[in-house]
Image (cartoon, rainbow, N blue to C red; front, side):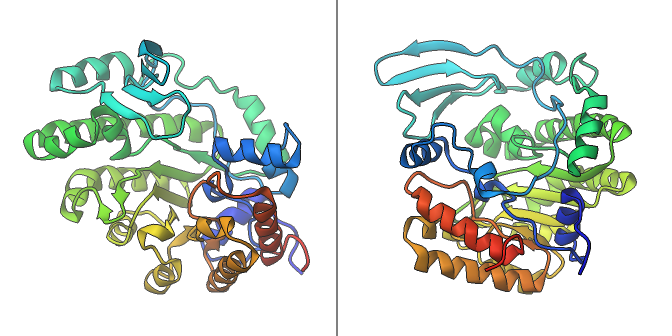
Length: 367
């Protein structure tokens, strides 16, 4: 029997298809609840302090140091208008948005911080300068003590920072789509500057602690595929990904991942060509079939791809997804998780049942 591994080494080795003592359990956003879902579970269990991860024994994920890789200093949040149903406000990212007070819908985005090349020049100087003091407030002695104690691997990059994803947040979807045609040099400049900023910051992190995982957040697909064509992905994003992959190789970073929602069938082979070796969450309702991806791309690490809708139905439907996870585990390079955050139509009893079954499949607990 293999000796027990540190959580970080187990995670990385599993995604690389190497031998592990057992499969990581409870990893990824596919085990996390929406805020409304957590409220429901706490009401159902009559436990206002319920922590699902601690209650169900989820493994530790990656350790992410305290770094500010986006707008810094951030915008000061400000309420601009409000009534009984809605609040119009500017958030820390400089986006003016209209939100329902009850939180039961997506926000309406009214204005973004970059509308012109002049806006970008000002933002770049004032809030995206590489040398701005305070970008890395991490206490490194405490962080190194933490990872020695927990055995976590270190991750750089997280939500909402991506080559496409961040530019979309800076400009808005429609404006970015138009600018790719009308102002291609501006888009390339923004993407290249962000990449330069991140590599500089990740270098500083890697000087303090060994980095095992570089994560890039994009969310650049919908139900019908990516928001931009493969040609545009390679033209605009490709050079940035090549730089990030080269940095990862030079620093010994073993996992380079991308998070994107929607149908990612066209994205997977492109990202793999550009140095990505793990992706998630593979939303089922967008048409993603992780077993099909595994057959086509045997070297791609996968987290997710189990249909979260089964959790609202019952044990029979959950068992179908557990069986899918078992098949994927046999093929390797897979960590089981549902295909996005858990929605509020899922009862606690169903979620706890799914977690118990998956703990057995992962080798955490015996059947």
